[in-house]
Length: 180
Image (tube, rainbow, N blue to C red):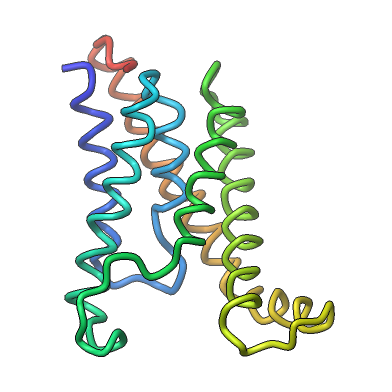
């Protein structure tokens, strides 16, 4: 019983990635933070959120956006996204592992957005060829990413509030030992 709610919330959040949504309005940051906060067994903290990300990526990349990858099976589209996810988990461990409250979740969510923005835009600059490999090119890349940052922040805040809120509400409402 103690893991069911945490697993269910991560699964539900992950499945929302398959629904139509504005660009970058996703639960990725919230899933990483939630896993870091509520799974005190390190292997679960890593395995469950990464599995949620990986399995939904497989579906998105090979079913929804298959034509973008030349109709070939795509295992991983960007290791940078997984690196950003891992960094968000580390931030979550620092912000949330000892105590979860609204202020900490807010700070961790905003940190998640910043981490994802910095890492993924850096990856676009280094790998895409869209920008010159200069400081000006890097600045242009980050500037071009700003319109997506708003949705990243909104998605991280929304999904973090939903996941942490439902978890804490359920813990109090049902007086169940759901802390895993």
